[in-house]
Length: 116
Image 1 (tube, rainbow, N blue to C red):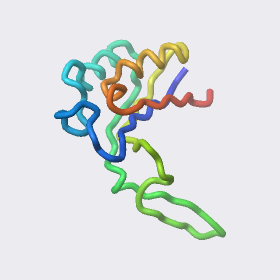
Image 2: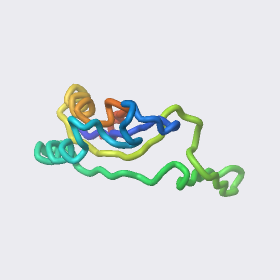
Image 3: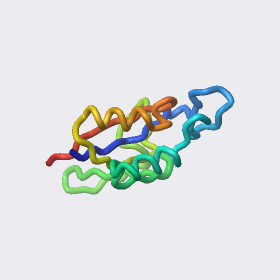
Image 4: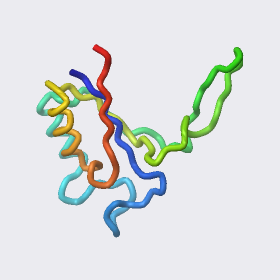
């Protein structure tokens, strides 16, 4: 089963651990190590960081008109900072993979299954 794993961070930009720069992983587990492990397992199909929310554009069509808005589509408590597409046997494995991601300690990982 494939999952989209959204890597989310707080919009305040406050690090989870005092003294650690915003958007960085805890020292004991870095993102590169997680990527290498998941790629080696064949669980991670693709993943990328994305540009900050200030660079985003939301597109809507209302009454036949295209409406563009700078920024995210909704007020949220967490902002999407990146994503991974992972291949797992089931939700339990997807949770295990997400829990190992460094950003699970200071941000959040949202798992969304693909329609099969």
